[in-house]
Image 1 (cartoon, rainbow, N blue to C red):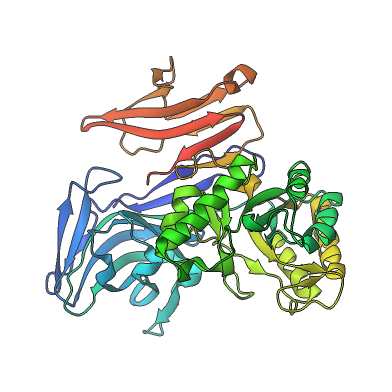
Image 2: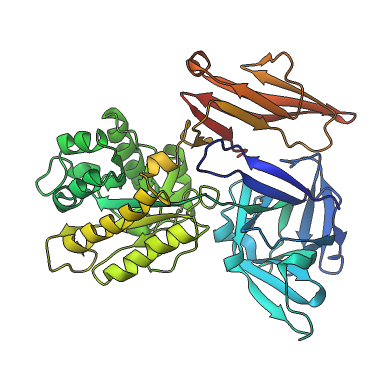
Length: 492
């Protein structure tokens, strides 16, 4: 078993630290076939996203198949979440249950997470993300406490529904750690109503805070809502204008064609009016399902959901987990100012991004999803003390989730003109970097350093690395760089 640490995403800024990936397995031979009595395993050289082959499991009817990874003891204590990449085989609706179990020190000490096909969201290749918050802990022996520092075995199990057979290809499993060097508070506002313009926008601007406003496009210029002139002024002062659909209807309750209309036409309105946040969407009522997420993917880069409560998974606001179901915290009439301040405190102390959701900001007597202006002003001033101290950023979502292409690229800002691209292909003997399909003279190492100036940024660059060894060659990348933004293409 070879476990290697690589830089999974390229980030070059004094604010975002590199995201580290620990590659646990490529499933090309690092497993033990222990499912013979209930299923089967075999190599898969056709459905491969990483390396040269994957491993396919086939359940027996109504039963399960599993594969085991037996490891030299590895330390996963510093990692936040895991990524399991699979190919669906076309029958994922027949899955009853999936589980992944991490054994530590003893067969009776383990961490385990269960999830269903709806969570994995199988659409061809699927990225299944499991955070440590999803794990339950078991110590049957009572001798050893489970400890992430001593992981010795991982078992992945797929169970079929009665009378069904499941074929699943496993491509690779990785652990990730993601840490910012300060907290990021993203204040978002739903529906685009007049009270937000009267009572929230002035405070946001005067405090130098950048918010995101998800508007119902049909209501623009309708009394009681934002006008087009309001929206233009807001964008010119650091605020982001994004979509909350055309009619603010729950997209899970209407036909797919009607849902696509809501997504497409609200996107077109924003694009036609030159709003930079056109690539962001917030689901009406926070409601989404696989069908709605697939449709949102056609027009938007990221979509914000809600979890309907004050509980919050600190990992779930990163762009790496469920980009079309970003979780958020709802601030409503029952939310006290002290509670809202505690969220800001957590954002700062844990150095994580948090998305806050506001609706009406009223002068007094807030009910339901409204919040009183006095509390909102106090919260903004409280956040500003951290901002002034350099421990918190207030950004709109367009600033945090920068994108180049609406479905294929994730972009992170960089604040230096020295860029370093890292090729983490394993077992490579030679490297050759290409810029716009032209081999770069002297760029023959695993790290390509670019000293960028205004001339460099004046054109778009698509950069990749061609690696090779005795087994063949691999196209690694692509990175897209333009206008002082850098992106790594996600392999969907």
